[in-house]
Amino acid sequence: MAYTAQPMPTVPSPILQTALWTTVVFALALVANLSVKFWLASRQVRHVAAHRDAVPAPFAGRIPLDAHRRAADYTLAKTRQGLIELAVGTAVLLGWTLLGGLDLLNRALLAWLGGGMVQQIALVAAFVAIGALVDLPFAAWRTFVLEERFGFNRTTPRLWWADLLKSTAVGAAIGLPVLALVLWLMQAAGPLWWLWAWAAWMGFNLLLLVVYPTLIAPLFNQFQPLEDATLKARVTALMQRCGFSARGLFVMDGSRRSAHANAYFTGFGRAKRVVFFDTLLARLTPAEVDAVLAHELGHFRLRHIPKRIVAMFAMSLGGFAALGYLSTAPWFYLGLGVRPNMAAPNDALALLLFLLAVPVFGFFLSPLSAQMSRRHEFEADAYAVAQTSGADLSDALLKLYEDNASTLTPDPLFVRFYYSHPPAAERLARMAA
Image 1 (cartoon, helix red, strand yellow):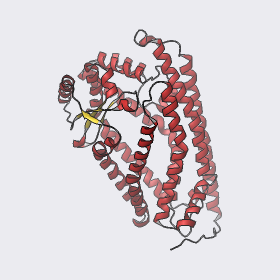
Image 2 (image 1 turned 45 degrees about the vertical axis):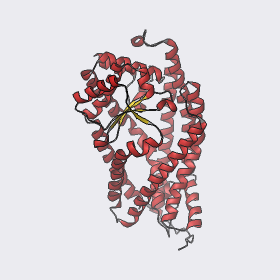
Image 3 (image 1 turned 135 degrees about the vertical axis):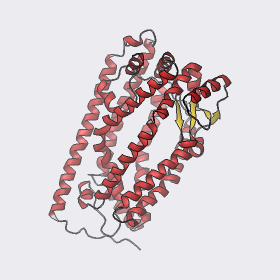
Image 4 (image 1 turned 180 degrees about the horizontal axis):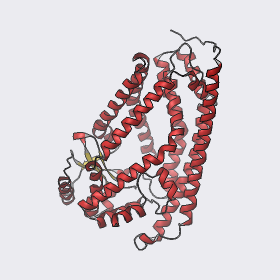
């Protein structure tokens, strides 16, 4: 059935007043958000630049001055790049909302496709595609200019484009069915659709934790079993001491794309895997690898992963409940620059507006989640020190900070908002204590 444009009916005055207040609150929150972010970034730039030419006393003799300056310059470059992206992102957000971009896109697709599920999926897909196109130059700049300048990039243009195409295909293959399910529930599941949608979303996330290591990650990287017999024996013994089991120990070809080093656990339940970047194994001694692995084991032993999953469940439940309420409120659409459809569903519009608005307000809660994450990192460090050697963990962390060009002198307030891991000085001081 073709969609026919309907004249906008007269909107009751109370709804218009609430919509106006919604616009004002959103605009004020956006200005506050932008101002705080620019202020924090300027503090970070000044603080790092002021300490660029002197290695902090706790690291004197362990970190060369050249490495310290390189880390400062890398941090400054990333922060300044982030400011440009922040300005562009804010302009795009205004364009989608108060300037009517999302409304224009919605009307164009309604005229082309009519009102229905296909149009709603097309609206979300077009929104995501436009956002990806806007971000594309910044992503290329980060890889081929910023990372290249500091010696981290090892990605070729061909590999970069291949990764982009594969990630787009995987995202579409996974995301479109989930989107269709959520939109269908919004129409068919009644007033409590948001509860059913939340349950489906959580089930999907748990399923993704299981299938990601074996089905998705190998599309982008090669994973080879750990072949170093001595290191494998050490790691296996450590895991047995910690009461941890995994389906395998793997080495990932991280050096194919970047010089950054890392190690991580992936998967859920019996599908857990231990993955080492090849760059990490090339840099650390076996004892230091043990210490880094013990830190990661600490997250599991101290049940940080289930705690984070429960927190994610709770926040997403609140989010879906809020979306369930807002999706039925005309002032929500009008206040954010969109005319709600009168003869077609508004579910995709509500979803997109919610996803655009929530980060503006949610940013002010970021210090709470960052603080919880840093506390977990301290606890995992303490567990690693108890299981291995504090000196080995300290040496490993310093090597990783140096190799990844992580500044040793971040602004303390910037840390409180953005850092999921404690700064090096705090971690080493806590371990020493």
